[in-house]
Length: 166
Picture 1 (cartoon, rainbow, N blue to C red):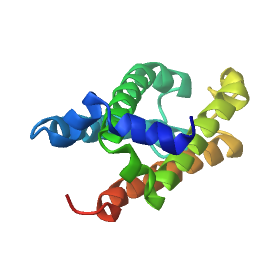
Picture 2: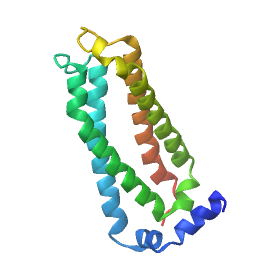
Picture 3: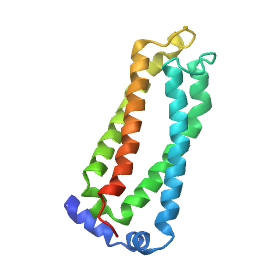
Picture 4: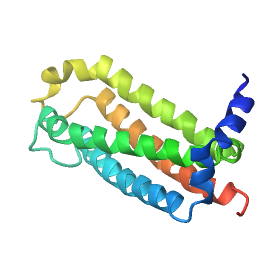
């Protein structure tokens, strides 16, 4: 089964039809998606600002991670599920937009950024946790994160303007 056939199959499932035709399903899922996006981005912003030495400098980075990681990952999990639900409502149309594809690429890049941080710099957090400034490489990771999330949100918003009217 090719990817195009999969998208058409998904579009024809009862769940997809319900998401498209229900008066309440899409608006409720969209609202939860946006609200959890806000919560998630709040945590990301605080963490990245700490890594950039802009905010919460009295707290060790490990403390900030410890406090924010659970909420950040919970927000991301809900955001991911609601995003998949929204996509399933009209997968063929969503996948046809350049902004959806750009958003997916940038989400993957954000994931790579987090993975690389956790596999490299993050493993040495104890070495720089007590330092007066975070290392330049750590700041670069935080800056990349902030830029990617601004672009992800912008692309997500642009999807709505690229879709044909209902």
